[in-house]
Image 1 (cartoon, rainbow, N blue to C red):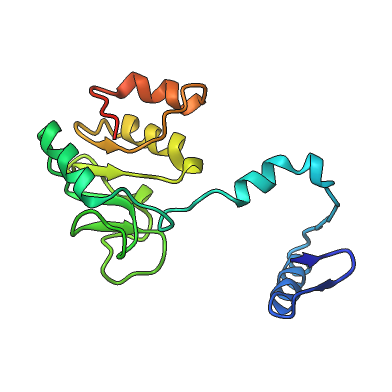
Image 2: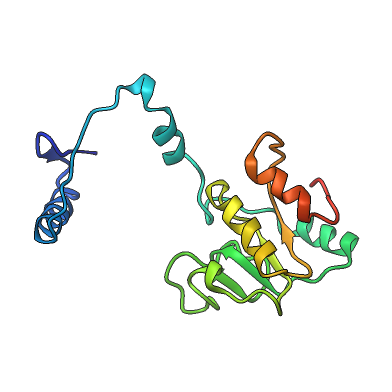
Length: 164
């Protein structure tokens, strides 16, 4: 927690904020800070509480059963860490020497059978990448949220739906 207006905050973050402010000054950026009352702070607050990849995973045996039902063998886990990956090849958001790529969005998917289990904030981008690259077969693990914009686009490309 850091208050830009008062210049107070935790000791560990204060030097980092100083560096950011100096950099902003060097490149002529203007940084403004304003207080958002708790009741009005719903969107940033909810986004900060979202899980990120690495925070959760589908149980391996459940996913393997689903693969058998669908007759699909995945070739790469696009949103994973070494600890929660579902196959040998994976992309990680953090630095990992065993990962195929650090950013799964930069991976060419046309030759892959990818498993996508993205954070909620990345679902629309993931669906659009699959559509744009015309990936023949992909597994997307998503929550059932029919009122979301990405859910409509997912329906357009979905061939088969399995509830796990």
